[in-house]
Length: 220
Image (cartoon, rainbow, N blue to C red; front, side):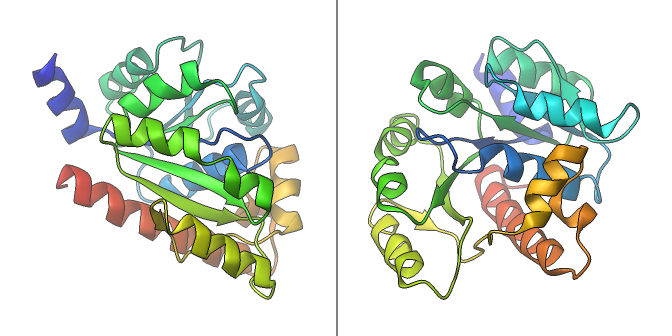
């Protein structure tokens, strides 16, 4: 099993989007990052572990033949990643359901990096502990992404400061933009439907941060 795990880490990089509270924007960020990853590799896969299957629905709206690929009907995260590895995928993005720690935990177990989206609200910030504890228990790197952010709000700075007590907070915040919402209803990412380039700049920056953290983990 250890040799299989090492091979998986070498060939396929796995990013898990996890949050114990709903509405943090996991699905939107998973879609946007996967589409961005496709600019550098067509071998990108998605796994949707949420019973609501919002990411899978987004993929259906995207249309046949468009990247990234969806690995469907996944019950065990490790098996889904093995399927993606067998297809030669460079990157796998896993969307997890809020609150279902029994589903989140095994997903974290196959991750090279866990991204924890957090909105700048007291309830969201206070809800990060369960996922953080799972990451620490399995010695998996994690980082917070301030999502739906408004940099001018003092609350956003306060949230980032508080989260810093738990772990790494990415400087690459993601703003609240209609492009992200519109894109999800069309099977596209925010940058694919925007007009001013601001959304694309945010996701480009976040993608670069994700690559740095993952490659620091896997040495690739």
